[in-house]
Image (tube, rainbow, N blue to C red; front, side, top):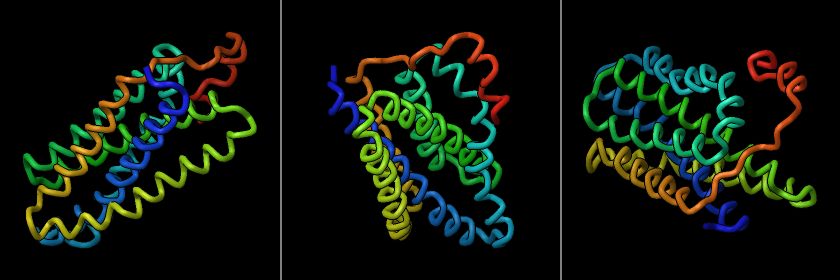
Length: 200
């Protein structure tokens, strides 16, 4: 099983590829929908699906994390992302793609919640700021590189989804080399009074 340093590398790599898939989706789908004759206003509303997914799942993540640990949560989130990316190549439909975008938002938020919490709770205090900065940098680099995949549409419209899906799948597979861990349990009264839905 991977040690703490290897685990950190795996987690931030997954975050970087997650950022790349998000950065790729926005321009690639916008171009494809525009080529299909979809108006810019509908195109813009369509892009909100990702963030609707993020908001919908946010209040429900803390309890599964405490019950099952970090690894299962990250695996579920990652699988939602790469499966949705592959499904984009099956059928071009405005509403089908809307649902897939929302599923990617849900999957990405699950993945980020698991990875970020794991990093912050297991990193020594004197290294925590540095590790979170690397985490943010990796996501930002991925998000910045994602739009470059728009050029692949000229070769084949499915190619950006296939490549980003394969990258997500490879990064997701590396999680099987990481041992599962659980967050530190707070006392029952504190957990009840500060549960996720109440804070949300």
